[in-house]
Each structure stands twice: as structure tokens, then as C-alpha cells.
Length: 408
Ligand code: FEO
Image (cartoon, rainbow, N blue to C red; front, side, top):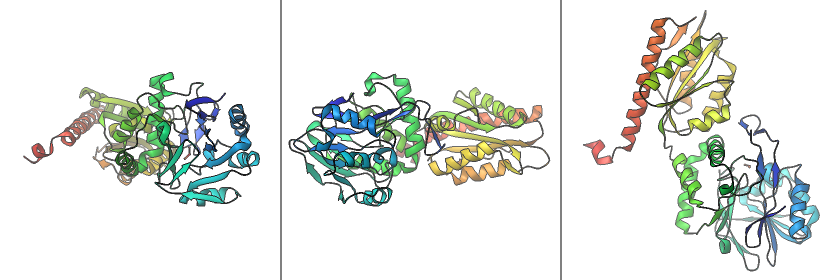
């Protein structure tokens, strides 16, 4: 059934309980997701965003419970990606007179995906009066695509920011205050880390721009997951922290082992880091879910990355991990590499290079061991783990030092 979000505004989206990955396998979605579409009733009826292919009927039947879909006058496409635009053709079949509005960049993506009647582009500051309600548009490039935009319903102080502030969380509940907060924040964190991290600078700029506009926001209704109606500022502040690269005394150790030697090193590094009192997360691949690990890495200051050598390079799951790490472009993190090899090495220098390419400041651990680590090599790994943890703490303390004190 549709769910009221504000006066004469209804959630009419779809719940995808079984979705388990997004963007190929780069993003796992163990809790499924939702595709949120919002119906605004006024003299002219507007639908903001649609749902993924396969969910057209679910959305249309929800719309029909509120209004005849043929009455939709405007279809606002905040973003061209298929999970939100996939049902545009189905809506237009029922509402052939509806006008589709999108950003200027949206002309490109939507125009190529679909054979649509003429699209109308809108830009930041443009408004659309529906009757009593007025929609205001704010272009938001790279949150999540160049074509993304926000729609703001001034009378309801309701922001519809499409992908921004979302979570991949399938639930019968529609509001953030109705779900388990641990699950909610884990999914919001995973979402930011795996989707928005590369665009953090744009996120900060957009948050500042929206603040300067002085618009009041009572509710943030994203296009995935639940709606922030109680204290929506909490997710805005979290985005500001994440986009600023704020980190804590956390070290994530990610590794893949062949015969257990790299794992022994990882455990020794963990022991050493834990001896300094920092938080340590030990994540063996492929047992650990890479999407979870990037979520955990978002607020970590340090990353220790290990692999056994195979064919003179790193193992496959670590290779996939570093490829994604490079694309996500975390900022302000410290890294180091370790690993083991038999007849010939190769993984550790490749890992160090990968860490550099991903933008991390790299410390040399000098931990590429042959065959199995000796007790001396394990002691060296413990010692380096402790040194790395101290560097994490020192670096965080330096970052929080008042400017004049740092210069004194
Ligand atoms: Fe949820 Fe960028 O699409």
C-alpha cells in the first residue's frame, strides 16, 4: 500500500527483498533494497522517480490506490540510472500526456536509454508549480551520476534527493525511526563508502550549497531505503563527516592467504596493533564481504593489506579489492603491505604500489616472508603492527591539533 510522507505526498515505490548485488558484484546487498517513487497530489499530479524494471506493476498498483495513473501530469526523473528510470515507459503508457522533466545531463542518459517523447530539462533554481505545491530543482552532479538532481517540495519542507542519503535496506517500514538503528547505520555507512566516497568533494560542496540556500528540511526521502523524518540533520551531518574523511583509531587488516603464512602475519600484525589499544578489524578474503569491509574502512585511519604471491602477483580476491579501493579514492588514510611467497615474490611490492595508486600514504613494513614466517618474523610483524597503530594515533592527533599549536 502507499504510505503518506507529507500532506498529499505518498511513497509509491517497490520493495526488492531478493536483490543481492548492485553495480554488478561490486556492491553486495544482503538486506535487499527498495526503489522509492513519490507521488504528489495537487491540481497537477507529479510522480518523482520510478522503480527498476520488473517492479512496474507494483508501483502502478500503489499509485492506483491513490489516484488514476492517467492523471500524472509531470514525471520528474531525478536520475537516469535504470533502478529509478526503468519504469518511465510503463508510466507513460498509462499517462501518455505526462511530461518528463530531468536535468540537462539527464537529457543524455534518459534520451539514450529510452525512446521517449520530448524531455524538458530543468536547472538549479527552476521551479514547477503544481497548484498549491511548488517543486524546486537542485542539480546534484555526481550524487550519484552527472545527471543527478534533487527535487524539493517547499510547502512540505521535503527533500527528494534520489540516491543521496539512501541505504540498500528492504523493509516493511518506510521511516528511519521505525527500523533497527544498527542495521540502518550499517547500511547507510556501506552505501556512502561504496557509492559516494569517490565524490566526497562534490558532496561537501553540495551540502554547503544547500545550506547557503537556506531551505528548511523537515524530511529527507531518498530513492533507496527508509525516509529520514526525525532529525534528518543526523544523516546530513554523517555525510559531512564521511565526506571530510574524518577517521578514528581503527586499523582494518585485509588479507588473502594460500597456505596460512599470510594469515599468520595478519594475526601477528593484529596482535601488535591491539597491544596499542586501537580498534582492529581482521578481515580474510573471500570470507569477509568486500562491501562490508569498505564500509568499515570508511572511518578507519589505517589499512594493512596482505596477500600470498601467486604467478608473481597478488591473489585474485585481493586484486579485486585493490581495484575497487583505487576507484573509491578514500582520503587521509595510512597503509602498509605484507605477505608471503615461495620460490619468487611479487605480491607485496604490487600491493604497495596499489595502495599508493589508491591515494594512501604508504609505510614500508618490510614484511615479505618466504614460505612460513619464523618466530622472529612473527615478532617483527607484531612490532610493526604496534608501530603502525602508533602512527595512526599520532596522525589523528596531529590532524585535530589546533592550527596555532601545530605551528608553535
Ligand atoms: Fe540508485 Fe545511481 O541509482
